[in-house]
Image 1 (cartoon, helix red, strand yellow):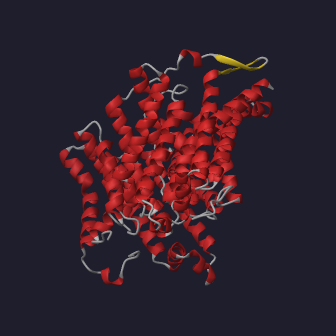
Image 2 (cartoon, chains in turn cyan, orange; image 1 turned 45 degrees about the horizontal axis):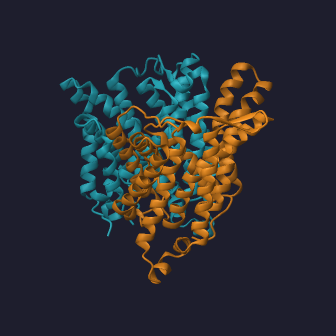
Image 3 (cartoon, helix red, strand yellow; image 1 turned 90 degrees about the vertical axis):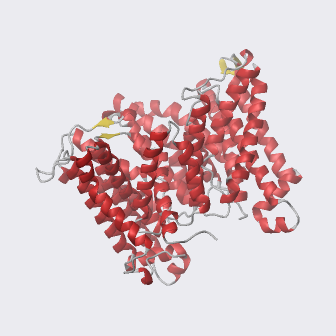
Length: 323
Length: 305
């Protein structure tokens, strides 16, 4: 199995390299396209793609590279979003406070979940992370002051002292783009560091890694917390994008969406989550334009990918197919 | 005291329904090593089939029987068309594929039955309340649920532990290659097990249908509860699923019934109402997290595998 960038691939213009490059260029040009054609909806759609890609990327760091399949990752999106929403409601409008709180709160939750969950493995890990996400979901429903089940409208986006105005759609788009690129770079650095090698070693054979002296639990926990914090930041972006938070953003099917994006794009690839998020969201949008029953096609398509495609879309690009 | 007994019965009733769902999930997981997110869709289909057939045949019982047969057929067809191609894949591929199926079934139901929900009405003799203790009246239908699901659970136990088919099922769970080598048609066995799980889920759906409305997505939240049951019980263990189902049913119901009063005694009105609403929904997940922290493989880890 090809888990990391093979040395032979570095610097070679493979199909995968071209697709990723074209993808980045396209994403960079979306605001220009929207300005030229007046297609405001394209901006909305692609901003969502960028934010969800970041969430899927953070999930992929633990799931694809670390073998920790968290089925409750939408909880961190929600925590990040609620941190922004609650602070905004309480009159703390500064993004310099809101965003760090969003990241810190998600990281803190990840510490608790990780510390309790990482002892289990396989399907039990999937289920216990799901359980913790459900708890946070119900906590949000009980927050009467912040809208309870109905959610909360955020009337004022995060303020950055006049430096960045998030109400400017183009600026917000490029901010998301920059944050996503920085996150991809960060994940790339992590995966290819000594730390990342320990994480991947633990995925392949945890017992052997411990036998040669690595306290893998601690490594995995740190990785889990980084992913949680990253997703919390995506949540803060999402709250500023929709100007609305509600428990629905933490429903377990949202965690399922994130998982689908990561698996669909290809779990062992740096750009997999971005490709996956983009494919999933664009496909959903395109299908709902041609039919009132988009999932009648989208659902079986996911099934076909699961059955026939090994390593997601990235696996197709790299020319790997299941024997 | 009477209130406590009533809530206790409600808890058992919820627990038995969860067991029907969880038994299928845990069988399918234990034997085929397969995670099925579409299990809740079969629960939903069971309810829709029952509502349709009951309206058509004008009989609740006939509608229910036809619905179970129909979900059995859907389950077996699903296994032959799609599920069996995913057995050899890892759990994440299975999650992706069955998540796709979940989306598909929700949309299919919307296409066939429309976005509005349906109701499944009970025969009049089940609408009454029965006096089970002096001063304690309990809805007859809920007693029927408890009785019928207990009977099904017993039947399932006999089927799995005492019949030849059950022997093959258990053998298939511990060593599929060996069973295949002995000349048993493993493919057919798997199709039957999946169909059985589907029928149990459909049955649970139709039993619950008269109490709740029949609607799209009705299987999604209860699916997660069923997963909680399977996980607490130990994946692959039917005995574990039974114990865990009762535990989850009781914790959920009793928690919802008594937490508000309990918290109200200590906290202000507003705080306690909001907290109790969250806390009573969280209870089962707290129990599950607690169980897994103490016993990472559930209460009754399946010995085979």
